[in-house]
Length: 333
Figure 1 (cartoon, one colour):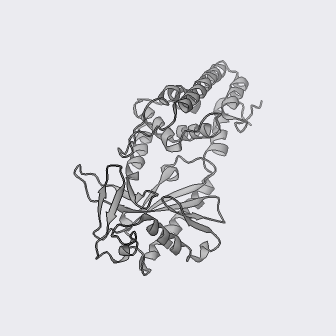
Figure 2 (cartoon, one colour):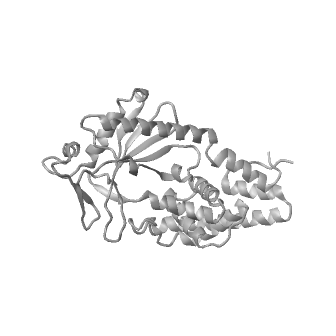
Figure 3 (cartoon, one colour):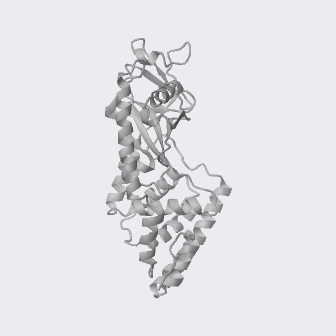
């Protein structure tokens, strides 16, 4: 049991917020084994030709911003477009047109068309995953954008997202094309999210990931509307991208982030990939409630820091328990 705020936060981050290191290692091994099994689908008749060069881990587990308990792991599995073309309409929906020469893809088109059906592509993954003997007792199904593998032996699921890569567009950019949930396709680029968080974290000597995880924990339990995980990450990363220095103490950073969020939540937050536009779809009422909660917790954190500065660690820790809940360690002599 801790007698100082610093030891309380160290214990809290290690035992409550951050993923257990054994779980992380097991999950990574399980993920890599799954990818090896999917690679074998390439030899199956009727399965789309794989393009392993564009496989990529994405989502908060890949970005190392996932908090306990580990619930899902996201994978993009690359496919060879075999000469297919794509066209984006004014609403952003992308249709992929398959040439007659793209053998395995022609059977996965919308009925009586040459338009590739993303639902049928996902269903192909679902069918093949069910042939892996180690997953025979697992639940495997299609959701909006992925084939979901819900394991019986572990707490997490795998979301397996099929994807194609575009040729360079007029601005020189390439994009991943993934299912849009409606049978067609949409653009994304997880490389930008990966590189963005890596750059900003390195800029501040590796201190940003813990700050993001702490704020995700707070967001998950706070008595207010929940901010989407990705939106919260983008707000925090933008904040740290503009800062020159960061404190070595996470409680100081938490106080600063509460203060920043109380006003930043009202702002538009643009997709760093420059694909989705404004990510902040919260209503004004939701923004107001989040702002009020953030400001209240900023004030409580400020009081905690004042107690800590005066040497009253018991009162400081109790203030943090008021912000972060009963899972935050209690003070002990």
